[in-house]
Image (cartoon, rainbow, N blue to C red; front, top):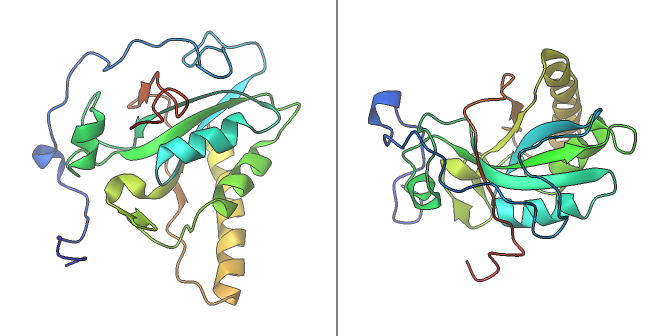
Length: 196
């Protein structure tokens, strides 16, 4: 038990909510950056999905970062297609709240983005960040290529070693495969949803 509730855990695929075939929202330009959130992208731009707890503050942190050209929030790593926010919060989709960060690798590196993400949250908390508890608040990276996954793993391992030196527990943050599908990105941002 965790504070009068069952401890968060991933559900079997057959027990996940069914979701839907259509996206929940129609993509619109980013409300702050006025850039596309689902493309088309400029030549040379790269993107990564980053989960580090609640996506609202994380998205703002990234859109304020030099070299980041677009952000969007949504869900990744789960089994339910096109879930809603409320479905994800029920803990029956296996999705993590994520920020897709589209960036110019000439201005900011993947390493810098991963370090920024690791330093912005506690990657040792498992299925929670602070008072936010649930499988959707886990720490994860969803790279686009195997090369990126390997680079992220090296960074996470190095960071985990430093945390252990200072008495923190095991780092649960992981680069989870390479995925450009299975993601539901929402065309909303903290700017638009400040009353949420």
